[in-house]
Image 1 (cartoon, helix red, strand yellow):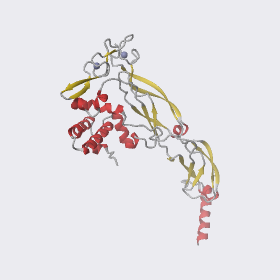
Image 2: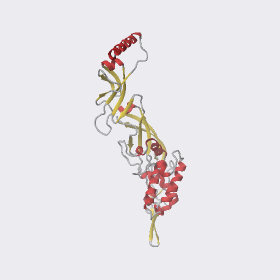
Image 3: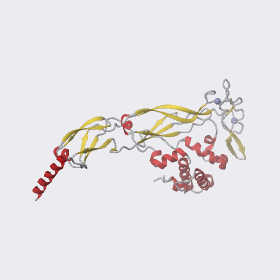
Length: 359
Ligand SMILES: [Zn+2]
Ligand SMILES: [Zn+2]
């Protein structure tokens, strides 16, 4: 079993500041880095564990998801869009920290450490829905603040009309090979910072980075039947890539607002329905407002409090496949708080009848 208590792994309290989390991770990473523990296979596991914990807790958005939904919120639990949260883009989060104190010998190798084209960061966003919206599905417009490809240079970082040049030092590979005695060491090219390209004439809008802060209105379609914790992946709607790399993805994390008298079990919708003594005793057919519309509910004579009347196929749509769940109407017998004179008389004679029967 993998340890997924990320706070325990890093040895920090749940309300630790981002700075404390970073410090704790640095300490563990220094201690367990494979380069320093070549004779200790457990160290590598510890190192990976700490790195994974930091990948989540070191990122504000992911930490919030983890705090709210646990590790399942980050993985494929319950969602219909599986994804690998620990993707390459996550590594870029902490390779910057690692790079600062491990130099070129980092476990991520030069291919990860180079500053060439890199995939943009994934983004996560919470989306609140009412029960009715979750039931019907909905189209929503969300506003995203994100790094976008610079519109003037199309993300190349080079002034419009010019092209970045291939680095003459490394011939565009971003890496140079040096011989040290018997060994040959590959390091990121210094001339181009590992990107393999040289921008001689940077774009003014983005100062050569190829990215600008932007705001985007995005129309998203939420399919019917979604539940809290479900995630929708929108490929390529995350942050723009670096140096012409592909954009990251956007994950919408759905949150369905609880509504009094309603609950959910799988695809079944459970709904409280209030009925009177007389309806419970004699049976009745009543109309109720359900998310599916006005529904008729047949109360059997002699219905008991908590008894369930099932309406087939009136529950939530199955987002993964075919069909619908059921609507389960739970009968709640309401005791009248105020009685009219006539009602009081009727209940009194009912009580007399009951005591006569029991006596
Ligand atoms: Zn630009
Ligand atoms: Zn170069």
